[in-house]
Length: 187
Image 1 (cartoon, rainbow, N blue to C red):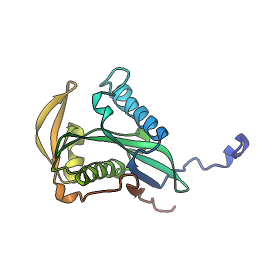
Image 2 (cartoon, rainbow, N blue to C red):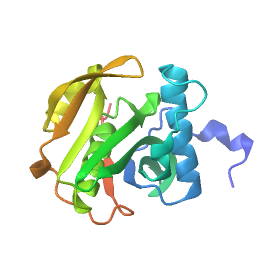
Image 3 (tube, one colour):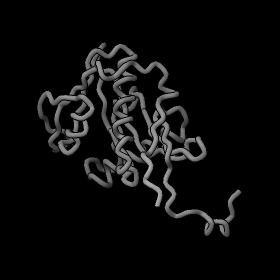
């Protein structure tokens, strides 16, 4: 166990290098994902008052990106949810990455990849998302195209769809993907 006196020995510039992106399987993962969504959508962006949960959360699959310490998940740093609207048509929503980890550009992309690949494995023939306008370029780089525009909670969004050929099915969402931070050159 680390005692308070040992804290002076820890490097202050430490940043996790490995992340697990998978379906939330433990209660603490779901709790941290919902807390992250509240922080991003309620506090940071002011889209919702108090909580962003809605009826979709009752049947959506919650995916998380977790920073790892010694290979073990330590903290939820990103999340997205997916759900079937009707047979074949799936939606992704509530994509959020912790502000301290947004410079890890791969986290949002890996969450998006797992969301579409997981839905694809469950019979998805069409996938959609309402994407905030500032995030459209990221999605376009990931083989998505805009189908139109709409307003969601008073904010402009693009209705976007991925090219499913770029997202092979992921049948094991509990294992998910491992993503690594790009290393900075040694100084």
